[in-house]
Image (cartoon, rainbow, N blue to C red):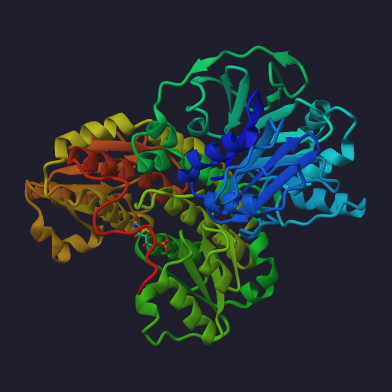
Length: 626
Ligand code: M6R
């Protein structure tokens, strides 16, 4: 996710802003920028890549000011005098590739209003069209730039009052830091759905999207609530609610040290990312529903809508966890859209002679967008004339660029090697694909509406599953010494059995295998004894009775069973050794809810086995070689 830092106070803003950005580097980003208010105007610099590139850029810019902002190579230069207010940003691309034009801070036509933004503005396209018609000139592809132009359009001489008006017009989420060239001694911050903290130091205030950028200066903070706006000067601050009423806020004390702050207080990135899933799923889905029409709006596929209509076969490719999301997609596409679908390992697909033609769509799934095998599969399919579509998390990545069209999963940067939030978002995007393909074909309005309504309810249901972490930890404490595990599932949760197994083995180094439940009696059940426990995924769905039979077969052979089922299924308690309950949802969405306890189980098992959870041995986050 992107990072925001803002500063106002007695010191030079620029070094504090750059240091703050460095403290947010762990979050992942692909460009960075800064804007500081000076006696003569606003100085801004942006760069693609790391903060060090931004620093180089600042050093190279021929400063319009009496003295350079940062030391040039070889000699120390004084910092710019009175540049004590500024904002800075690390951007992780969502709307538009990582370019300087798209980097923040963004500004208005006159370069007076500058802002850094985290989040997604859903109605930016419609606002942009309206503002462009009034003569506003846009230079970026971002949703953020519309906020600057809207502020310019409505500006009445008071940035705070104007921002309050503008925020009422925006749909979507934001953490914002804003300044105006002509309003001295003022820095604004606003929040809705994207975190923003104000650090209160001695004679200075630091605002940031994350306490990691503040902790070096102060541990006294104020957390803004959704809808609140802060107006900050070098001495004082006021906080307003969305209706311009001033509100009193408590000052909190941060208890973390720097290392813990980078993980937002979580002990590991993996756990943090597991717990981010209510938000990451909401971000994947945001702005993509036409709920009443039972349809979805996937801007990235609009250009190929006709080819999608002509498609009579889908091949989904990916590697590791990404391929498993594809397997869930296969069940959905065939059941709800009636399109024959197959799934392949990208590395197998590229060498086999798959039967392809122009009516075949290849869907490539990748978190990083850089997996070499998946990229090669896309190139192979293009060569054969297929329509190639991407489900990719990293904006502007190779697979995103190589595919004909695609949908970003918007799950935010994933830092732990084990894929968690990226996986559940990939499934969520495949549900959207299914609704899109389905509504063009056999899916009824009522079914489209039902799926959308259940998707809307998903983040809350994920929260309910996350609340089971302590319970799952207790289960792991009973089982962490076992050397082998079987994961069983059927139909939609057959791929999730494989996902549970891959998660456990990659971070805890405990041997685990995924099986289709029905396959057990054809061989694998020979493995089962009291030392070989099984996780049986058995939600109350169309194949529940079949799964229940598999569970009993395992129990009959002395195997221990940890069952995952739907809330309300008391009966299973008599048969299983442990039961984990997930909330009720549509059968096609159970994979998302079932995945969460499996992630937590793998995490707790790895901790109990003393593993390096975020960086397991022998693995890389992105596999860019064949
Ligand atoms: O970046 P990608 O999604 O293309 O990566 C694919 C796999 O390498 C990845 O999912 C891998 O299996 C994960 N470590 C699993 O947690």
